[in-house]
Image (tube, rainbow, N blue to C red):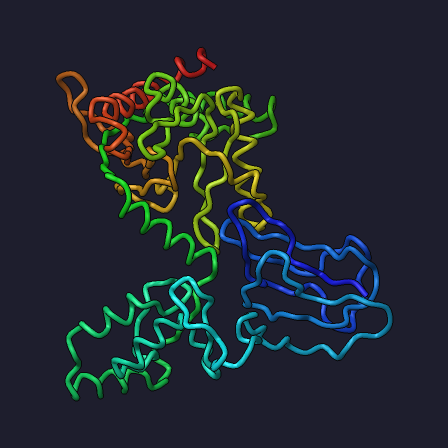
Amino acid sequence: MAEIRVPELAESITEGTIAKWLKQPGETVDKGEFIVELETDKVNVEVISEEAGTVQELMAAEGDTVEVGQVIAIVGAGAGAPAQPAAPVQPAQEQSAPAATAPVASESVAEEATSGDRLIASPAARKLAREKGINLADISPVDPMGRVRVQDVEAHSTAPKQTAASAATKQEAKVDDGRVERVKMSRRRQTIAKRLLEVKQNTAMLTTFNEIDMTNVMELRSRKKDEFFDKNDVRLGFMSFFTKAVVAALKKYPKVNSELDGDELIMKNYFDIGIAVSTDGGLVVPNVVDADRKNFAEIEATIGELAKKARDNKLTLADMSGGSFTITNGGVFGSLLSTPILNGTQVGILGMHTIQKRPIAVGNNVEIRPMMYVALSYDHRVIDGKDSVGFLKMIKELIENPEDLLLGS
C-alpha cells in the first residue's frame, strides 16, 4: 500500500488545486506513471506514482485545494474501489475536538467551514457576526478564496443598509433563470487577479509612451526572412529585435533592470527577459534566460518553445522564475495603445502594440509609414522620468535602425 502525496513544489508554493485525475479507482498504475495533474499559482504539475499497483482510493476531488505533503490517493495491490467522485476533504481542524473544548481563536487560528455550502470564515469573524446579528452568507469577502475575516464583517456592518425593495430585487436576481452563470475562477486566474491588484496598490506605477517607425525593421525582416529560416529552421519575427533592443537599453539604464527590496535596490547583472504569453488559463510570463548571450535565432527558438509549452500547460517553475524585465505584445490582438501593469517585483515592463499605417512628417514631407506605439510602465519610486524616457527613446532608435542591433549581436 502506497500513499500519493502532494510533492514539494517550490519555496513559494504551499498548495495547489486538483486539476484532473489521470487515474480512477480500480485502474492500474505503473511506477513512475502520472496519476494526477495539479494546478498551482504558476504552473501545472503532473504527479507520479512511486509504486506500481491499483488505485484504491482518491482522497480529494477535482477542484479541491490540497497542501504540500497531503495524502491525495492510495495505491495498492488488487482491485480498487468502484470509480466515483471523491468526497470533499474536510480541513484538519474540522476533525478535531468538539467546539466546546476548542480554544477561542484569533485571526491566526485555523478557519472553520459550515456544512452545505462550505462557507469559510475564521472563528473570530463568526463570533463578531453573531454579536452583530449578521448572516455570514450576506458578506462579500475580500479574500479571493472566499474566506470571511473580521474586517469583512466590520465592513459589512458599516455599509449602507438595503431597503426592502432593493433586497427583494437582489433576491430575484439570485433566481436561476438562465440569464447568468457563475463560473469559479481557476487558481491561476485568482492569483493573477490578486497579484495585479497588489502591484497597483504597492507601486508608484507610471507609464510613458513613444512611437516607432517600423519601416526599416520590416524591410530588413522581409529581405532576410527566407535566408534566416533556411539557415536556422526558425522564423524571424519582431520579438527578437525588441528583445535585443531591451537588453541594450537595460545595460545603459541599469535601474530599469533592478528590484526594490525595502530600502535597498537589487541591481540585477543578468538579463532574463520575460515574454508574456496568452493562454486559455490566463497570461503567463516565461523567461528567455540570458537573452544577452543569445543571437537572434536562439531568441526566436526559445520564444517559440516557451509559447508552445505555455499553451500545452507544460511550463516548469524554472521557466517562470527569475525574470528581470518583461515584454508584452498586445499588438497581436489588435491593441493600438495600452498601459501594461508591472510583473511582480520588477520595476519595468515594455508594451508593444499593433502596427498601423499613419501619416507622419518625414523631413518637410508627409508620408504614410507603418507605426507602432510603445509604452514603458515603471515604478517611479525607483526610476525617474529621465531614465524612463531615455530607455524608451533608445529602444525606438534601435528598432528604427535595426542594422545596429545585428552588428551588436
